[in-house]
Length: 300
Image 1 (cartoon, rainbow, N blue to C red):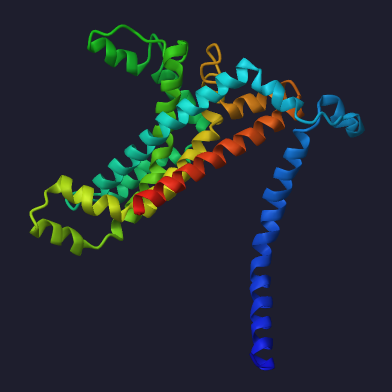
Image 2 (image 1 turned 90 degrees about the vertical axis):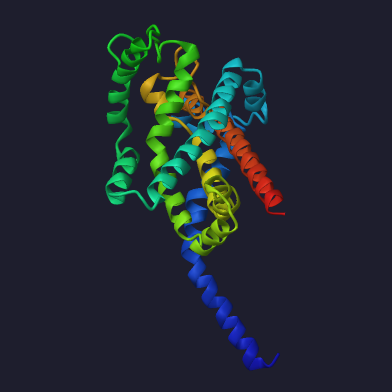
């Protein structure tokens, strides 16, 4: 390589670093440093006294992690979170896909209106939504129990019974969030070439076969993005159980993030709270890697 070509390559590399610099600075400030600080904090007994005098915080090694692994409340929160992810995640993706298919159908009218209606819960504040849904779930005056009564089924204490509280929270979360993924699915459906559908129709494929052999493969990248982001979002669920049940009844809706909040800002055990955050990060990372590996296997 000549000296002039080498100089040109160096200028290109320097320009590339300048373009990357703002993003790298933001990643450093808002991801790397907070994660590193949380990891260090999880190795200490940082509490309310250390807020005023940080020098009183002591290094305790992995003691916080050992405490969590022996804490039944932590395991209950982990089970609740896993239940939320395994049931709510696929349910949310399926609901989003179903709504997107309906909106993308040729016979549908007023698409813009329906998109706005379905997307409205996403941009509505959770507090307002929670007030409405608490009335819907009301054991005596709620609409759901009124409908069940019409079918001859007795009233259900949706938010007061430990067996029904988590399904009620999952249903609320799916309803509130499916509109966001629906728009991404609609965008994914619109880039699938219509020639493929026409060729499949000429080969005698019915609607189900066209969906299976044309739509689903065409949506594979969209599915991967939505499934990963939905899983990450559901692992971090906090607002729904916090607003609706405060983690009750009997801890049936306490998730890992809500448990982390209680440890950190109710009992001021910042070290333990940071340990929960680190474990949640590792669990979420493991779930993401599993999904990406499964996606690669399906493509092979």
